[in-house]
Length: 292
Image (cartoon, rainbow, N blue to C red):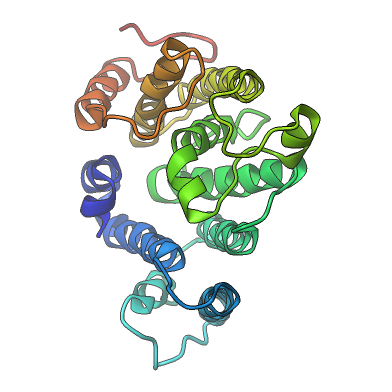
């Protein structure tokens, strides 16, 4: 499931996560990939009935997570739910970062279910990104850097924050088709435009603002990952940033007009190039750059 959904995630887990945690890492990613796919799947029932169905499914997953965290996993889990149960087997060692990842990802899924078909505020979108950034960052710490030094300061979540901003810009068209609006309603109201008016000057000005914020976040995130102790964690973090920098450049090249779709960059080749750099420069300090 992981390889089909994200080759970079697959290779990151396959080659950078230590063998003892590799199975759990695949379970963690694949479980939420499955949950997200179920929630996004076409549903031809009446709109409100389909919405209730998605909410009921997610509430089952939320209840399952809470039971697993209490050590009371049910025996009657269905299919892919077994991945969550397997991930939280008692006696699996320290898991504070893992629990944070799971809880925050459930919040992300819950927000997506409830925002579908409605305009949302800038504050709601900011919180949404914060949940996602916390989840992914803590997952990386758990599976790649647990027990090793990592700066815990204001830069901790900025790499994923920048990546998520770019991810939402990249997915503008498919999200519109699915009923998700990634531009704040305040921007729409102030400029008197609809969420589909992606080719207007006002929309492009907002994209420019978001792109510049994302770039600053990625720069800060790169400096953060250059200071982590674990070379595995450092390589994965820098490769994650590289995965989104091509999109940053593409948006700038397109003068901030979002496209209906984007070509897939050579994620794997980029990841290995970044990995080689990090391995050969294992003690890059704060503020230093890894040579190209």
